[in-house]
Length: 267
Image (cartoon, rainbow, N blue to C red):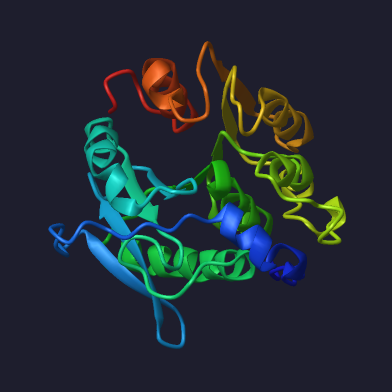
């Protein structure tokens, strides 16, 4: 299937937007490169870091795009948790995050995710990993995750969106951006709602009941728009944007295992 032409994200690349959407943080100097780490070339002189927490060659794999202010190494412990459930867990950074080079922007995030996806597939294949690949995005990471599912439906087994946004304008307003002042309209946004409507594979939407950044209504909107017949909306009660996993870890992980067809023991 021919990949779609990349939309024009110039309206979101304005400095006043980029400085609110992205908060790059460098990795601690004591964390050394290991055999789990891969530096992926995404542009001339620019590489983005990814970490492969691998469990078994035939196991399902998740490619995860994290939220703003987070970096790959924040998920080192969770990588072990996923592996214990029989899931290969691969986390990718954005430009300027972790040990990645360059500076982030919306346009580069949305083009880089394609290069990351291709590199991850090739790396798994080279290592002999043959299990199905699921794409997952948390918060800001919902945008590259949905970009990939809209562009590569035949190569992705399932989709997981956690704390994702359906519409860009309310999010930008919450972040303190004057959308009218910068000439932004929803049609110039990420198109998450439109992209998920094109996706028909198994889908899990996870959202906190009291998310103060991206309200639960966005999760509901993504679920409603999703073109899949096999889809689940999991509300984590009493949780907020940044404590959703810790307040709802058990149902969160059980829902992922169910989506991936794993038993309660992770086999």
